[in-house]
Image (cartoon, rainbow, N blue to C red):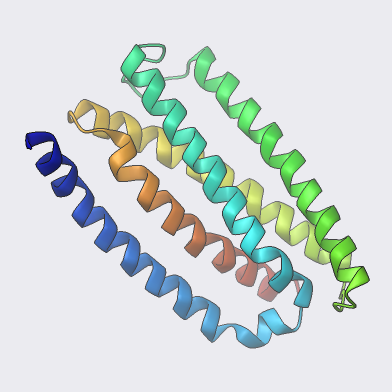
Length: 183
């Protein structure tokens, strides 16, 4: 019963924060309909890209938490070989996944007659968004994991719900921002 109470106490605040972030995400998307409709391929790819960055971040949190609990990285903010291996491995996975999603998305768009406007710009914006998000989330999750672990908390309970909501908020926000900046 004590474990249940601990999980409940750690989760309730995070679920509420995640819900609020979700409201902001929906507001950003609904207020940017015109921008998104001008690039229909983005509407096609956005759910998959949101899922991709959220999944990569979730894997990162799980790896960081596991490393902290088994002691393969120290609970200090410092560079380690294990952290560098995880960084490059997840970055490579992200890049391969982005190019695969872009290829599949553009093929799907071509065969279903979804309008493809300025493909070079869109590909650049999407790749730039995913790389920036990955770099930001890697640093944020590493620091947050160390902080929570040192406070005696399980980083998984806090960071996984937050990171999925944060990724769902940041990816369309950055895409919209880059479209405004580059067009």
